[in-house]
Image 1 (cartoon, one colour):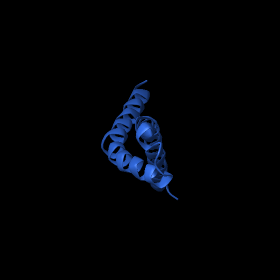
Image 2 (cartoon, helix red, strand yellow):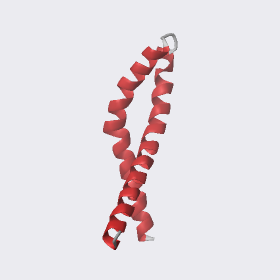
Image 3 (cartoon, one colour):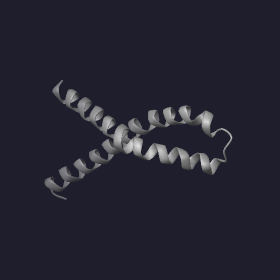
Image 4 (cartoon, helix red, strand yellow):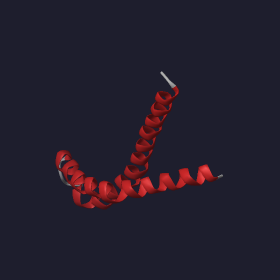
Length: 84
């Protein structure tokens, strides 16, 4: 493996780690918020229906709001770290 291939592999690994971090930062607080808000509505429903309702709410919210915000936050922190 030459130097260029090693750098490309290191970049790919860092990219995967960044995506996972963005996923955690974006999903965890959003999931807590949605579960808290929907709890009074879904408490009497069956588990599969509760999961369906939560997924219907979570997917657009995470894809359109949470993940972009988390991506911005991680990028901002990386830039700040590289400046220091």
